[in-house]
Image (cartoon, rainbow, N blue to C red; front, side, top):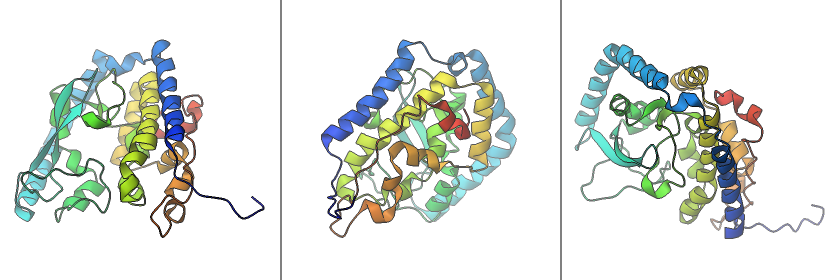
Length: 280
């Protein structure tokens, strides 16, 4: 540190492989040791999901209809945005969201959303900020595709492991990466895919594996309350992908290259106390 000639570099493929292997091994050890919480696939959890959704319908249905009307009035195109996602044990289903992006027929949207790479509708930012665009997924919960709480379902190209339970409307990774669009906006566009695949996906995998191993009714309740009250815990994301990656002045220099190596992910699975604030 004393010579003042430190060089800065982009994390290379070897770094990414080591981090991804670390996360995969941690998750694999849990599976090999049968460390899956009985709650995650229990009939009681399914009953809990259905009862909660049905009790909330008198409030949520009028809200959903109002949002649908606003989406339709403020932007031409369909009200709902369907997308293929990977669910329990690799099964593919169609997830539903309120459309928040300008509809252009035949145009594919970028799979990694930042604050700069999507054309949002007038109400899109508001719906995304409050997570109201996710409200139609309550239908996915009632249909049995999803649970209220669990690992978020990934698009097929972002699926790096199969989850043994229903994916969730919210979960540990949701709270940790609730502001990921702002994080990704600080990463150079030409490095975004590599950054996401090499660092963010393995980080989310760690959180998902920890949830699957330790989930209980009480932890689901806590995660739901934290989600409704928007108690995000972005500190977990900082621990998982390296705090330096979240500092704007450390992410890019004037040439648009990563200005600091992204820190290695700490093994949260080995130290469960680090994720207690997320609900487990």
